[in-house]
Image (cartoon, rainbow, N blue to C red; front, side, top):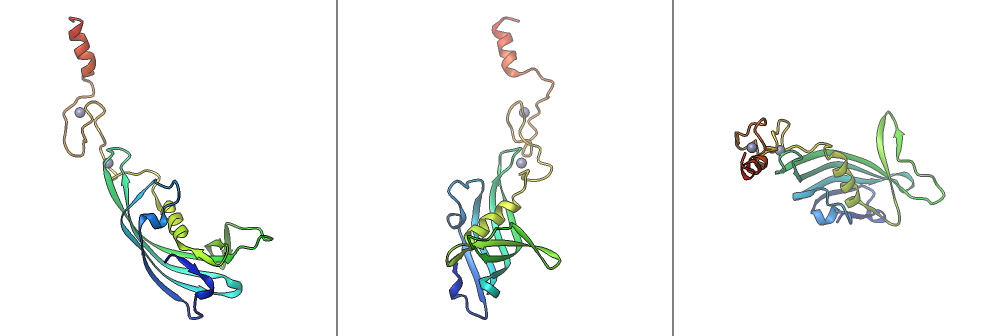
Length: 176
Ligand SMILES: [Zn+2]
Ligand SMILES: [Zn+2]
């Protein structure tokens, strides 16, 4: 259960160790990544003053991505600390995205109604860690622009100075 009813969090806090699947955390149109295996959220949830909720723990997941150079699928392991403060949303209050508490930046989120939605938190965290450049490895050699071979797997031998094969057959047709 990734929907946590705030009123049901006991005073001593709640330990959560919860697997999640892609369908738990995907939004309507969020098909930017897939989970190649169920992820897991381990955290401790505590209620503080004025219905604030503190969530601290770790997020583990394996994302299935597609390399931007060779177009091969690859997996990206994620293991990261999460820490958030949830505050009850009050319509008369302005929301701040980030509030500085003590000396570090802590993420502050708002919950509406009786529940906090940890699925949404997981979704946001996964987006935050998605690399801008998705490469199966830093030195991925990509696809040959000439024959389309995956140059990580074989040396296709194409020389980039070669004439375009389509032009060569056109030349033959024209009797040159
Ligand atoms: Zn690649
Ligand atoms: Zn080639």
